[in-house]
Image (tube, rainbow, N blue to C red; front, side):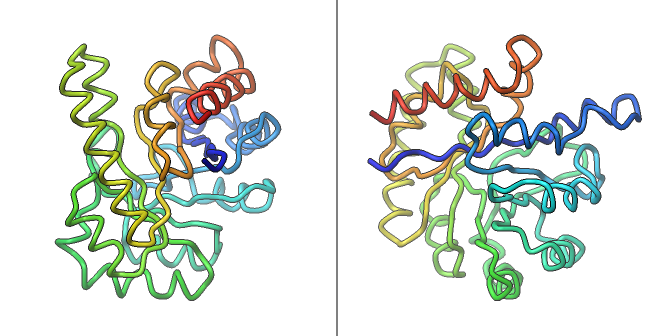
Length: 246
């Protein structure tokens, strides 16, 4: 199997910064540390309410890192304009609700297929790799392929929650569904990524799915950085990913 890429999401460095309204910790510094520790890419989600990452952070990341930037955003005209100005390596479209703590579930591509097909066209023409953050449902995977997305990122949050709750049988069924979704997406010519809720303890089975090419992990790594340092946390996650892949 190909070596699995690791994208590090630095959103919650900005969350910590914004809690005090100060200039630190700096998300760009975190991204540069992640890159030095072996991250293959940096992910940042620019939300409508700017609760963590801000516009200036996106510009600083574009100028300051040498690995690809994955720009997560909702499919709004405001975000399209920002993405077209910055032209990051990738744009990952996610569902977004103002009241949610974190992204809940996947994007309904099948229910909004025509609009999303038109929405992603200028992004593709600008050279951005467009990704759909979706569940493992067959309808969503096939719709993502039809509209011309290059990538689907499978939402692993439910799998992670089931394991955390000790519901191992249900977690195994969810894992099987993720495996089937990854196989279908790959067969349709989509590159497969995965992420949400992944930790040292649960990453192995996801990393072992052969069709998955990249994992995007953020909140857990930023949390572990409090105890072991960001570089060490990333190196340990990389070790566990590689071990599972082997």
